[in-house]
Length: 117
Ligand code: 5GP
Image (cartoon, rainbow, N blue to C red; front, top):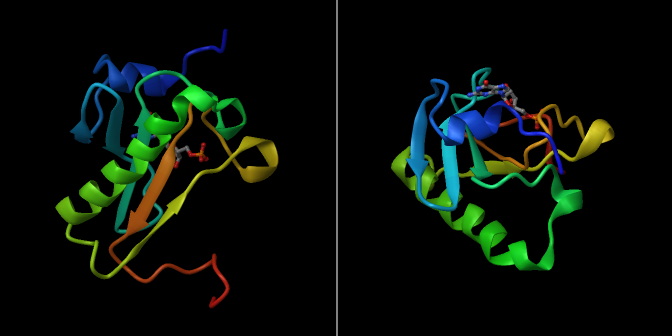
């Protein structure tokens, strides 16, 4: 059994965070150390440590993360200008918190990734 992280406490609202969207499957909240004008983390409510632990039965849930990302992007008024979605995985991927999370970054032109930077 994987150890819970602070993200499970955020899902259960046991510690304060700026939640921008929540339903019975996922929670989206502002990153405490934003790397862009808009930086939101979208996570499954249940603990999946990383992309490595995603099971076939989770596929609908993972798809839902993307639907919610698009909805939150519209809510934040960054959808039409575009944004970036990132999953870090493991040590080499720079993952710090072992609870699967999608970074939604936008609100300004983003540098440092992609083939046109
Ligand atoms: P990772 O490097 O694991 O892909 O990203 C983890 C992210 O979680 C980082 O961007 C970090 O700023 C954010 N983070 C870590 N702890 C907290 C917290 O307690 N609250 C919030 N809102 N974000 C956190």
